[in-house]
Length: 318
Length: 318
Image 1: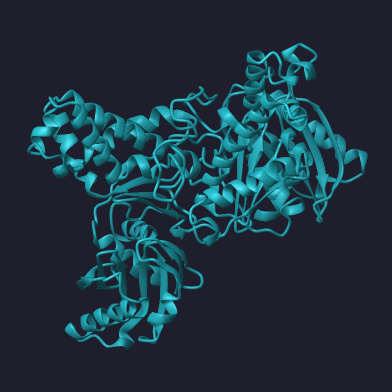
Image 2: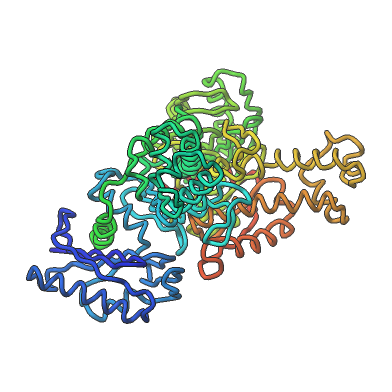
């Protein structure tokens, strides 16, 4: 039997046919066109899946189900996207609408949850039962796996790991609160801080790396500058690691998982990121080394995590 | 059948015989004498239980088990207290040692977990399956109930809800970190802030309420002063509610429970505390009122929560 995993993004939607070994047999993506009515977006999603099935001559009877990872606040139990900022969606019956095109079962969950589940099923946390994944992108998402199952909270709007306080009264977060972790550890925040530091320090090599135009700033630049011993770059990187270290320490004290996973472009920094973070939480988490200190590891499936994880929503509930 | 619940505190240890309806049939307490070797403390615990049994003529055969709520970092699976600051304990085999005196099964858990379980079994969250309890005492503990079960983290040292960041780089916390929630929302922290405000504002009515001696300060004084329209008292109370509101919002965004419970002396303020807090989280939690906003309620079992919850460790696993 096969399962379908769909990763619904604000720019593109990706779908893949996943086999029983969590391998993606075939995948494709198309633009999401968030400005379209939700029924059209979901029709596009159905067509994307049907095209994939046709391409490798698999009939619907061979499908045990379809899983969808959606951004926003998801009521997984009822298959409804309660709220998505990017899509301007409210109370969208995603599972029901997609179900008009397929006879098999359909499950949905938050996209970060799916990414975490993907890494646990087939990625950096394979065979690990308890993991916390923090996605460091435009925003910050969280996926929590407890005893091999996605933990979404008792009601929709849980496991929002980016939206817990880090700096009281600090930067305004996209959620409306001030000082959330997302406002300091997202890629957006790292770029904001690097730009500001480069602007305030014209001698910083970061300006050169951006070819004199700070709109070229990205999350790699401060790390590259730090590598070249640029004091300003070093400070941006160190601050970022402290913010992220504090955030991870919070989640160690709450979930005390086997492992903490990070995903997003900044993970290209690999051990330059994970080593100081593991050291940080060793000295900061409750009970220090008298308690269990989880390793911090980078996710490895990249964009495929969402597809594999969404498909796994089916495996786990069937 | 009966179960025993023991609430091991730094000053006193309390034990009770609990019936199948979660009622305490009889209870007693004796000084803990933390300075004694652990084997003596546990022997005292055993004698306290045996005395209770004798008093109401119940034989050990009528016991389905003994549950103990212990402070510190507890390895519930193995029955070991990994670390307790107050007791100066490290790797104490509490369950095994207590098991030398009894034939029935013995379970241990963290004291805040037991308090949460007690309130869910027989108190303010009865028949509720998902609850977060925050204990506001000398320190701040956390008890998390997911689907009717205590969630302690995958490894010992989880659910430490007092030890997550609130004010970056702020007050030093008892755990060694800076700016933890505990350092701002514990009774200790409230008293610290009230003392400081009263000292800096000699005209504040708080000085009068303390009879001119700030060592008389307690958590009730700022609330009483606020009731009398004392601007300084109002500020202390408002700040406290914001700190606590931020802390609760974090746990709503993570666990999205049915309900949030508070316990500790400050709960005597009842709706003066819970009403502004419920309003606060409505405006601050992720998704606002588009998501589920749990009610904030005060615990009602007081000291009995620990006994009933500890006894319930047995009911849940048998």
